[in-house]
Length: 448
Image (cartoon, rainbow, N blue to C red; front, side, top):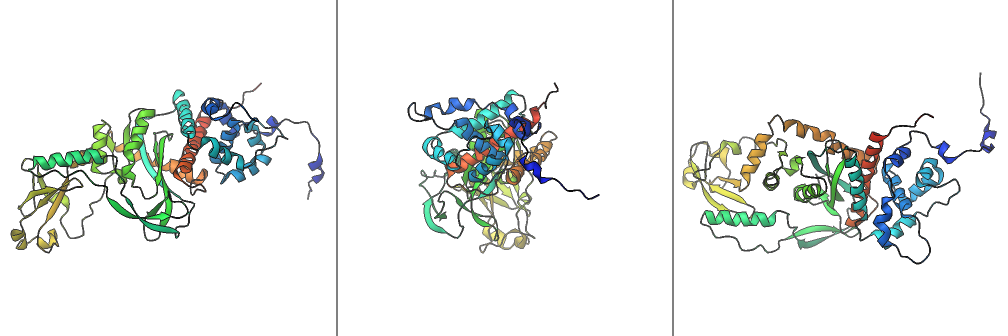
């Protein structure tokens, strides 16, 4: 039988509380039960004056941002629109049916006047992480490190070419010392102190702090890189934001140092982008076991691969497949020792076409001064305790970034500048950590 719903019920009057309208297992209830936000008062008390009219409650300001980043709402303007009609959000903020919701510009004004040059969001992030640690939810003996690009709020066609000082790598000083020591050991003159190198870069006229990122011919954009470290349970332990053209390997060292300082010394697993002599040297120096992947040789088809040339550590030379000695020549500024073959002998060698296309028939093999650390990392890759660690990364850091982009609005940003993007990263990962704490510790409503 066809039935019709009576729309007169829209005007029905009822006595009801806001609490009754929020489902018993709604995420906001879980978050409220898992985290007490009153700690924010202590963090911001120095940012407020003792005189003047009362400000909006700072806890409400922070909770508004957590609503935005937890539920993946694209802007504060849209968040305020949602709060006006969503009873669960009102309940979370402590508003009743008739409380006036703050204007969407309120958070932006407070950020500019109070929070901009502070570490407030970093403190909030680590306070939430401490809550997870106190509840024994963090398993940080293995740490998984990676990065993802976030499209900047800027037109990729609007840029200027500029000559800027080349970025100094975290390990540059340590590398310079060891290069000069190696040159002296081989009776070569040490290099003079490095002058600052310069390079050409594309700088956005809209957001100068973003970086021009080129992945392939089809992917060219202005972006930021969000670098993060996660434990085996998927909790984010630390994050650093850089322009999108900063190489991942430059950031692993400061990011791991951040984790060591805030959480403790871990074992580290990283993507192929981190498989460099400098990083393996750093990790072994910190007594951290690197769990790095296999990387394919990049030799051209039909040519001998590097492992076909045998290194003799005692005589500091290489032996080529035909048995010829490649003697040490020099150590360059990048830290690579160069071993060169005798030109005359190579010119008549039957393997020449498989060895080199050099016009002077000379084969050059390079070996980094920290190559032994790379070789040790390759050996560890097969170890029964290390192999499963790397396999775990797709369930941890890769899932963190996938969730951040699909559920928490990290595909792009409407903010500009490193400080604001750092705030976005801290709040997004803090929201993800809160969500995990809330779901894992939720006991559910108790029966009367």
